[in-house]
Length: 341
Image (cartoon, rainbow, N blue to C red; front, side):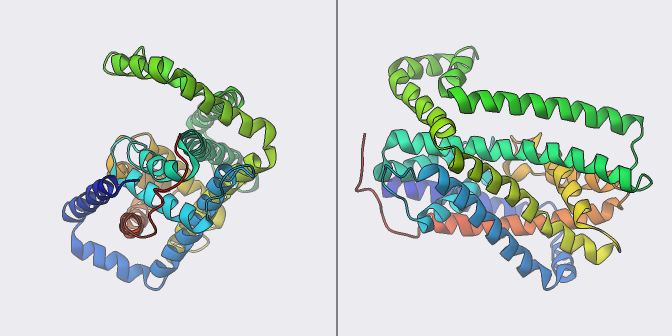
């Protein structure tokens, strides 16, 4: 990537982080109180998320590093993973920042088709892992109800909600399987061609790049068919990363509530992340994250104030890692000399 574009991404991220700090939706006295309450666990939580990002980078590395092509070092994959997520956090609609950045950084090294296909396939894998995690959390709640029906009640509204969620998740996963099997890029542009605001641009782009987009679809489908072990390994790592990240809630909530289990932390994380992802158009899911945490805590008969406390600490952790990701944009060798197609 040219330094001009790298500087643009860096400055946009820097400005976004500064704005978030200046408009933080909590009094700084409460922030200091939350950090004091978290104590030694806050640095531990930062390390937990280091492990999560390493797992994300490993997952993407399995997708990216086809044995027949140029190998991208793991350190560079990790850097682009953290920086990409940082840009996604500060960008409205999520994928408008991190994915273009990753593609532009990788293209000189591995070629545009491989860069696009690997980034899109990893993004698809990451989103798919969320739905697998949410679906598994529904099963976990039902299983825990059988063990402790008083704590994990299955009233009429809960049965209805879990049933609807199960149907929705299974339907989405079915469409993911079709995308993995046959590709999805050309189909996505076909849908965009029917949307009034972007259809003219989408139609022109599709007409002029149909051959390249078809090749990207072929590479995505090839990953599912001919490289099944890396495919399932990448998906397993992404789901496992969701489980590991639940340790954050287990450590913090365990200080406040006696008997708070790791299973509880998985459920709190699942339902809070589901709610916050429903407003994906907001940078860093502002407001939705805190609201989702409070609702998830309430659903497990946990005081809402505890949920908001955990959300505040998690928000601080996000800001720290976002700042790290933005700084990483400016660190590392320039890989502009490489494959171009």
